[in-house]
Image 1 (cartoon, rainbow, N blue to C red):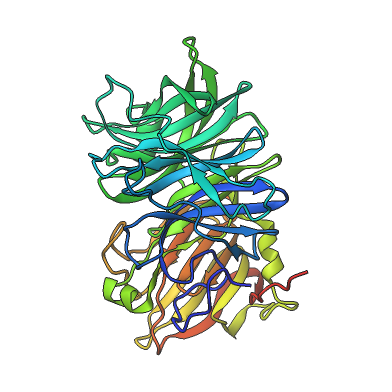
Image 2 (image 1 turned 90 degrees about the horizontal axis):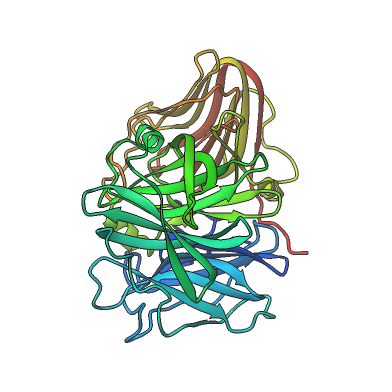
Amino acid sequence: MSPAAHSPDPHAPRFRVRPPAGWINDPNGPFRWRGRHHLFYQHNPDAPVHANVHWGHVSSPDLVRWEHHPIALAPTPGGPDEAGCWSGCVVDDDGVPTAVYTGVDRHHTGLGTICLARAADPDDEALAEWKPLPTPVVTGPPAGLDVVMYRDPFVFRWGGRRWALVGAGHADGTPSVLLYDCEDLADWRFAGVLVAGDDPVAAEAFGDGAVGWECPQLYATAGGDWVLVVSLWDKEPCATGYLTGRLHPDGRGGARFEARTGGRLDHGRDFYAPAVLQETDRALLWGWSWEARAQSEVERAGWAGVLTSPRVVDVHPDGALRVVPAPELELLRAAEPFVTAPGRSPLPEAYDLTVRADGLTTVSLLRSASGAELTVRLDPDQGTVTLDRGDWPRTPGIGPEGSAPIVVRAPAREVRVLVDGSLFELFADDRAMVTERVYRRPDDVRELVVAGAVAAVTGWEPAPPTHG
């Protein structure tokens, strides 16, 4: 069953997480509890605009059937989160699911505090009710660092202890990730700057445009590497990046992150603020895909934003990102594929398409009345995958502007494309991902045309999974 009510808006995703109406942005606190995945998100229940920030809440037994629950966190009048319950995470604190989040009060100057809220009944499978603590556990950034941006706590375990990251930006324009020892969630100790934008590997991977790093996330790999994920903020949401490296004791009771490589996390223009869930045998990641159409259209539709499909993330031996759609998404596939060979085939409104190439191959997915095409071009010999949007524009707004072709350098011989309403997700082998929003026009033709050195084509239409 879709997590959102079916909408007459053809751009509305039906199989990804979004509220039936209102605004959604950052995924927050992905969490496994009593056999269910819980996922929270930034949410304005009253309008499709970024204001009045609550935490929405869904859960699922299988990552594809999502059930809506009551709003988990709401601003408390006169409280530390009166001006919004902003991003954070959820952890198991001695058997009690606990949200660790950014609170902003009515007197804020751009700096958040770190607040806690606990599940009212840990035995409730739905975790339907949450109780915020009345005072923050951290009232602001550490003294002496000249921090002007401070938000988005993320809690993890390392070296037998519990630690937290907080995203930061400094007055001189340097972004950083701050580290805290929080073995006791009620007693946080600042343990230093884990990594900053002047780190040579970070500077080469991200450039110098970001003045803050938002939503820091960290996951461990089976090979002992750690992957730090950050959202690049240049006074507006911009892009996402990752650093692969190792955690080492710093000799002062803290840790340092030794980065060895890094790069763009998602190569699309409509992806931001991902959240990571570290599981025993894998790490899952969700991102926020914002609207790239006119605000007047958003207001008519009554909804804004969607979370991406869940993605399994890891690293390759060379330190590069490894990413694939979560295998549970195959539960959405219809009993039989709608296409099994190259050539021409009509495309449904939503689909899961895989194309494997022996050489240069072009995949056309959409054709406009003017004859322009939306295409994916695989060139395994050159090591590139190119997404060309043709004449499907993106309206300037949140995020980067422009609709120029996106060229990803990846030695890919296979691409997988997930389309759900306006949400377009492309995976180049297991080396790169691209998230874009594509808004079809009434006279556009959805048709698959695959040409070139094609090895295999398979496509499924998603079907709402049955309960059982």
